[in-house]
Amino acid sequence: MAENNSGEGEALHRCEKNIMLVCRESKNGRTIIKVGNVEFGGSTLVVIAGPCAVESEEQILTAALAVREAGGNVLRGGAYKPGTSPYPFQGLKEEGLKYLNEAGRIVELPIVTEVINEKTLGYALKYVDIVQIGARNMQNFSLLKAVGQANIPVILKRGYSATINEWLNAAEYIMAEGNDKVIFCERGISSFETATRYTLDISAVPVIKSKSHLPIIVDPSCSSCVNKYIIPLAKAAVAAGADGIMVEMHPKLQDALSDGMQSLDRSQFLELCNQLMAIEKVTKTFC
Image (cartoon, rainbow, N blue to C red; front, side, top):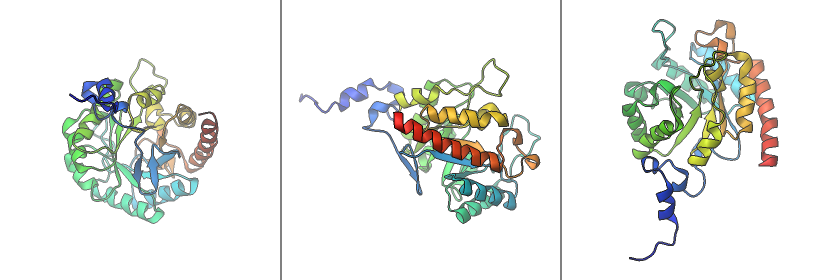
């Protein structure tokens, strides 16, 4: 048998057998995922922002204008809102997707929304540029496979009780179906600490980058659930090497129907964007 001098076989051998597609050694260089004019994993930090939930046509358009004016790159908004309790606001569903789509078109930004099952994925595919799989569905294997077959860019949030290995394997489910446009999102894990809702695992950023070629972003809103902690945690994530930040921003916090306590207002979001740009310049100087 001829000797393989390419090194490819040896690199694949170093991959764990369950994450042959996700592992860093499976590809030369890092994956860059392009969505319109936005690049995840490229040389520029991506900032995703918008309200936790789309509440009205006026609300999401006002938020979209604020995101664009502050320098955000992607507009987020939830149309389907799974919650611990069945009683709070559950989203506007397809009507919310239509409002989100229209707002994104007006401000010329890509849009992302969470899908919670295969049915909602079917609706979302008609309106959005990126889908998100939330923490509760990180190991919803039928949904992972469906998103893999849909071949749309996907933000895969870490389950709040998931190990990094389990998270990597969830991404493998998507890639095994042919979709290589996977973006990891660290959003905090359960711990004994009660000062924040979840404990943001900043170490996940360098760990994922050492194990996978896929980009990783961080959500400091969902992890802390406390307004005043969002900006410091976002800055820490960028300093650790995150490819992007996803935050919740509501134009009228006092009127928010979902998770207002973990959202920024317009002025705070502008402050965040200005500070992140400064940190990004410093990290590029030393990295």
